[in-house]
Amino acid sequence: MGRHATNPEERPSSRSQRTVSRHQGSSEALNLDPVIHERVRLGIISALAVNDTLSFNDLKGLLEITDGNLSVHARKLEDAGYVRCTKSFVGRQPRTEFKLTAAGRRALETYLEQMESVIRSTRMTGE
Image (cartoon, rainbow, N blue to C red; front, side):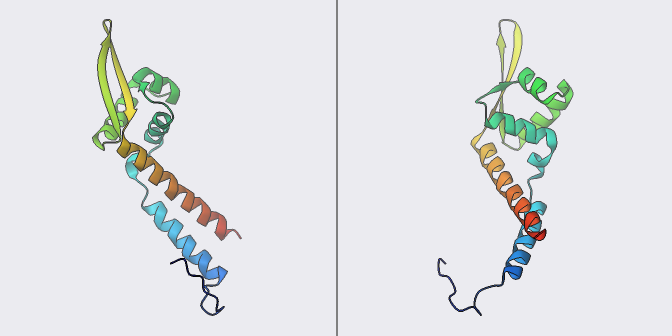
């Protein structure tokens, strides 16, 4: 590693590099985390990545989804260990808050790297 081929015959052609990258991007697309890849769940994870915590109502308003839709998707993320849900009361009002876990942050970072790879490979095919 780190060694560059000095002999032109040892260097891969730019065409073969594009082919490898294209296949690499395609395989990245096939390996996207299905838990995160769904639009609402990606929205939840993304919102929590830039906010320490968000309440159920904050997320519902931000994503413009129904209570039931948010509940189903939040539960899926919680079951995957990507989100932690805390229920409490403020006065007599129930309050549900969500927080991104370390595993959720790693999963999002991996997902974003894979998407960037897919985008790069797609752009290279157009050259």
